Length: 282
Length: 321
Image 1 (spheres, chains in turn cyan, yellow):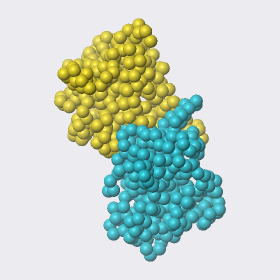
Image 2 (cartoon, one colour; image 1 turned 135 degrees about the vertical axis):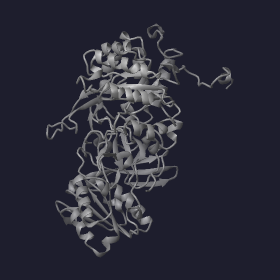
Image 3 (cartoon, one colour; image 1 turned 45 degrees about the horizontal axis):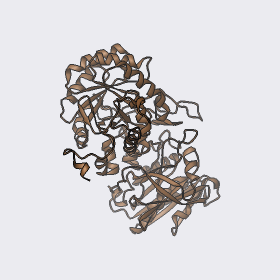
Image 4 (cartoon, one colour; image 1 turned 90 degrees about the vertical axis):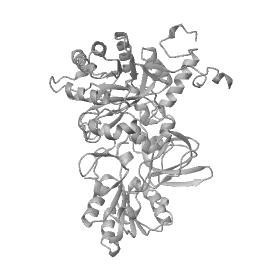
């Protein structure tokens, strides 16, 4: 299992250095002068100054996978892909240059290496949906650095719920959209079905991140074909470091895992379903 | 630098002395954690050995353990509210044997006294937990989580003075370790329960536990939480907690550990002023794992600003500031 990079103990304040629109999403970048470079699949708990303002919400920090990390002089630039859907994400998406992003991380277990999922794996298929494409961007780069051949399949609901493709720079990306504005009209799992029928699918592993229904479809497709699959999942979580026990995901053998410390990357064979009640309450 | 060494004893930074003795346990400062709000074992996975180097609590209170393992409640388990959250976690834990085997040795690595929180559905179950846990040298104190029904009477122990007194009387002879009763705010008169627990032999009380609460899914208008309802915590409950701490502190001679939405040194000082001997940080740690460290530093500043050299009880009103 790929070792996690431990986080500095405590929340720290990072300067926001960019906040750019990308389709219906935002990419917020901050300079982390105290933390390490994260691994693909790890996440941060994010908040801002003035969090829990006049209305008392947002109160809890919000968990976001890091989309890209670029070490520079004395700091790591962290990119987060955001969509304003609730009080927390709206506040984060409105961060202005020079404002402070409060964060704890990197947290959680990174994506496994392909060979850790399948002995002798010779390729990877990355399947992303909506805002969930974020951790696949940094994963794509780390796999490319390791020389792993890969295909990237990304799906979006419609034009307003799409964006972030520039995070996948220099790579060939196939897209699907339910409204047909980009690529195949339909689901990204339609593309995955075709790829998994190819001759080279047997040696490939699948990494997926996206809405629960997409993850469940990916899990079922891979299970039916006996293909190793790792999902980056999301549930509401209060703390991100194993203390609140709020992020319970049912295990296939009974009981629960804590997604923050045992995930957020989860071997699809370990869970009974990717449809976890409560996901998406932000 | 010489004045730091002049005492000839342990080095102490300038500023108010935050040290205290709680039920015979020497604590470096009055900030501990609320049970179930900080998992030191998981936090060591997330933050590495820095956790021990900067451990923010002067005593560590474990998550509640029960006689048998529990998986916990189905998700969703959290519901954010204005200035707080509702949780319905359901006490997931490894059970007594799993705790003693796996968790206790890990928790014993912490360099602060350890308090183990226990809960059982019967007096006999509580007795087994207190005996077995109390026997271990690594354990400094035991907290009784009484926000549970007694299977025989069907009554929530902590809501009933008579049940609470009887439980304490039954457990008191079983261990020399201090017994701390964690009071529930979900009853008519927590001060009466506290007084009954003290009569039964409790060494301290801690309060408040979470307030019973729920939240609806706005789309379906059905309960959001998998268990239907849960408990509210965070700054939203602080004024209620402060009032209950005042009433309980007036009703008992034993120490009171106050908690409920404490997020700053000023909040902590308010609980101390109302009669708490120590305070616990809970939900604030979810927002920042080092929140308790900041709160302790702010508390020292609050005392210094008032010209106080040590913790209350001191006549707060008589200071000139």
